[in-house]
Length: 232
Image (cartoon, rainbow, N blue to C red; front, side, top):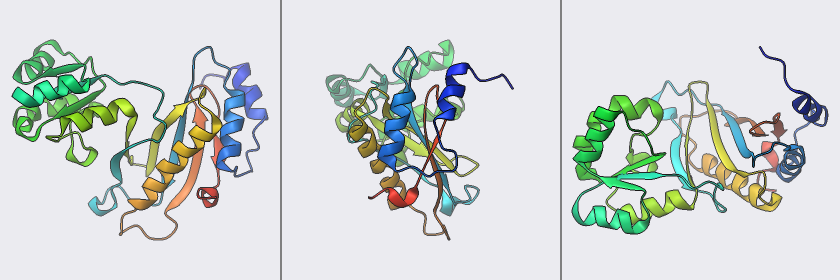
């Protein structure tokens, strides 16, 4: 394992590893330690007491953060006719049907970050499962990316919609904004995400649902946050 840089080590010394921080306190600390030459992303990792191997303990969905993520993502919409025109009017970066499927299949083109499809296109888009699936780019009804309401879908992505999905270890990882955001806005985004995870708690999940929460920036160390203070 490579040795951490001096900046990282100095930042680590300012964090009390034995403490569970209040969300606002943790965010203000992280902001003060974000010294990179670019605007670092603030990310949250939530350890859930679920077993993702069981279908009834999956945690997956999407939401629009109150203050967005600070990043505008490029959107591809698979649609035809009037729905294609709607997608273009809503601000989609790329719109197409069989032609876009062929472009991805033959050219290996993946110049987009989010894919949206109308339900009638999924029979064709399904051919891209092996390409888009492993990259998390496959349209999915659970995240609102398979819909006839392409206008709303595109606008939500552009407004800062994020997707969350529990990994094999029971963790959720998601961005909640940039280090340049006001601490209040980052805190509101953070609380909105955690409250959403609580709302979608699987009925099969038993015991303490949230086992741990850590906030971090792109280049910085993690800060542990108290789950009991989320709604404080």
